Image 1: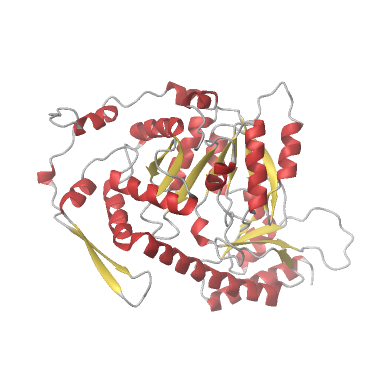
Image 2: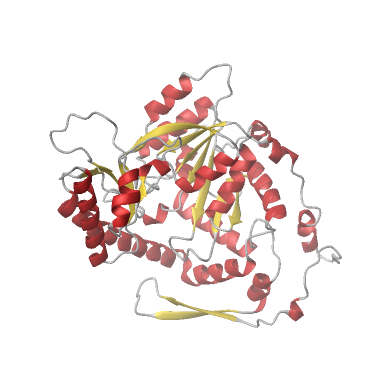
Length: 439
């Protein structure tokens, strides 16, 4: 039997703004409309008779045969649900599908103390979760390098970044332990750890099972929550079996409820559909939903209805087949990129081969052979000037370091380019590095 942390446990983790939130006086009463015989004068919902859409038809490739196309019509009750305001946490049909997915993928069953909240992409609910847990000026644990897109959220709260180094196996658990054990008793320890454990952005690293288990043990020992941001979970193409998620592995702990998981449909269905979802303890989902109720009311009902119609018509097995095809596609992209890296940047850069995601993280060797310079090299000037002048865009590694340190690393995305453009881009980068070395 799964032992859940009690709801009151999370009171110490909530930010002052989260504790001050109150349920929407309108949306908080929506569930009562479902009572048999209830006549609702509650919400200012527009009358569906005025909506011009009578059906929505979607056509999609078959997950098992890309040469075949099938059609799904959204009509009747499903369309009515998609055209009207819906529950803050997400359409019931979409949420039920997510429960089934999380049980299949992570072994987490509905009714075990956690629930789902759908967002306009995972970044939406991630942003709201951070505001629910972090007070201005709080110290936060973040893996380093870290996803640059999340830094502005923390920075808007004037957070103190406590950078935890990573390598090809994930977060350095020994370093994390040292940091926490040396923490001053006069200062509150960080309440959260933020990590992207599969195909990390920018490093492409995938955390090993052993590292994840060590981090989970530290979370219990030092009383912090893990924000598992996992948009690349389904883009794993490593040769070894996929490591279990934090969400799954916490079932091995004496109690569950320290992992808050964020998934996205952006990388596997459509980035423009803007659907992600958050799974975690009910007490935290409630405050995130209260934030949504006053910020944007809900995630688009229609995009949820479209996504659900497609996913329901596929079934879980075909969804799995589709994600495997997507990961195989990106594996091919990775292989092409690395082939040209080896051809043109051998001796000019160092890297670990990514096993998930869509990024290469590589260190430029900017000192010429035989150079006695011990100064830390910085890729920023080369990437923003020499490489740009030669017509190639990439991101200097400093933008992914929480405290903006110098670094010789660079992030390059391999998701879009065809083979000829990859080769040309890396040739141009080679020229820029050789110029920087004075060769």
